[in-house]
Image 1 (cartoon, rainbow over the protein chains, first blue to last red):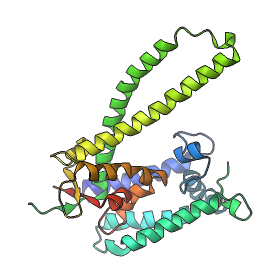
Image 2: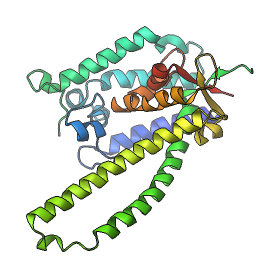
Image 3: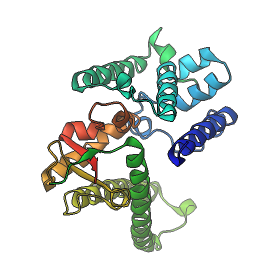
Length: 129
Length: 158
C-alpha cells in the first residue's frame, strides 16, 4: 500500500459516505448546473448526485428517474478504483480509442436529447425535484 | 529530446485543482477592484422603493450587464492563463509545473499559441457535458481529455 492508494481509498469512501448522509434534493451545497441555468435544458449529468444518493439508499426507481447513467457510472468507477488499488496491469479493459470515444459521445448526446423531450415515456428521464 | 511519458489522470486532477485555486484568487482580486468601481458608480441612485419603473429597469439592465461581463472576464482570464502558460517555454501552468507535467502535441512538440488556444477554448466542450470531457482522460487510450482530442495535444510527465 503506497500513499496514493491509501489516498484513493480514503477519498472514495468519504465521497460515498458523504452522499449517503447528504440528500442533494433537500439541501443544495453546490452551485446548480451552469448548462441548466443558462439554457433551461438538462445536461447529461443533471440529477447525478440525487441518483447516487438514491442508489446508496437502495431506491433504484428514484435513481433511474434522476439519472439513468448512474447504473453505468457506479460499476465503471468501482471497477476502475479496484483495478487501481490492486495495481493491476490489465487496465486496458476500459480504455477507448478515438472511434469508440465518438460513439460514446454520440450516445451521451442522444441521452441528453431524449431526456429533454417532455413526452411520455421520455419525460421519465427528467430528474425529480 | 528526452522521452516523454503520458501523464496519470490523478496527477492532472491535482494540477487542475492548484490552477483553479490560483485563478480563483486572481479573480477575487479583480472582482474586488471592479466591484468597488461598479458600486461607486451606483452610489448616487435613489432607494429601491423610491425608483420609477424606468429607473428600476435601468438598474436591472446595469446589474445583468455587470454579471455577464463578470462571466466573460472569468472565461477570458481562464483561457488566457492556460493558453499563455501552456505555450510558454515551460509548457506548463503553475499547477502542472508543481506536478512536473508538460503539455505538448501528440508528437511531443511544444504547442504554439494557436494550438494552446484551441486546446483551452475546447475546455468549454469538456465542461458543458457535466465535466465528462475531463474524466475521459481516465478512459482514452492516450489518456487524453476531450479538449486534448480536439486540439490533438497531450499531457506528459517530465
